[in-house]
Image 1 (cartoon, rainbow, N blue to C red):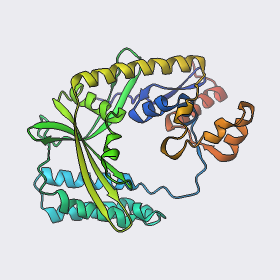
Image 2 (cartoon, rainbow, N blue to C red):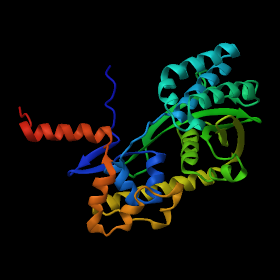
Image 3 (cartoon, one colour):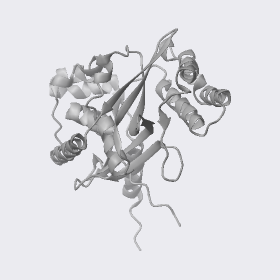
Image 4 (cartoon, rainbow, N blue to C red):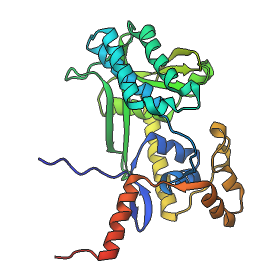
Length: 319
């Protein structure tokens, strides 16, 4: 039996790019600023790159998954650590060694892996089991979202057992201090609430809340800290209703092909990369976009554009 066709995340409708499978990243961008969402997610604009993308966060995340699976299956600690280090060196070593940011380079990644074992191998937080006995790690989902005509997708890092209950657990790497202020950024949070909704309504697990498992990396140090949050079903239901409403607004913007700017978000995360573009008169923005940005459309849009081009060039075959 053949597998069902994958549903593309983006499609062209009447020659206009449209998102049909949403996730927390695109949702957060849209809520922060519809114009930013249009420029990045739909039009594919990104700053011209002159540096190296190292994948530090992905490297640590993947290594921690190896450690978690080892703990779940009661594997030898040193053998599991060796496996995680070898995986990191093989898959990320070359790129991480090129990083100019030593707090997010190869040495920092290996330190975060080795020290993690010292810190948490005998942890009282245990990886939960799925009904089939497999560890509840890296659970992907993609489902229809209400009556919006859209789908919602994501990946739950892990679900753990803690103090007699189940909690979603999400690992975050950062250079920021792991203070109370840092953890308050996650309550409330679109990504966390989306994954809690998925855990409760798709995996059918009675998850009480979530744990932010944070790792602060520096040039010669690494620190760990956690925060536990309980979240009511009413709060998750409210997030779901809010998101259905927001996706309805996104449809209205697509229909009109007008995505307004939200100037209150211009200073977020050190400043929006399109801030200077928006500060220009609308009739001059195309020039700035061409000078400072490049277009990297989502693979789904690239593939569909190629198909459309071929059909226009050769004509559709008719029977």
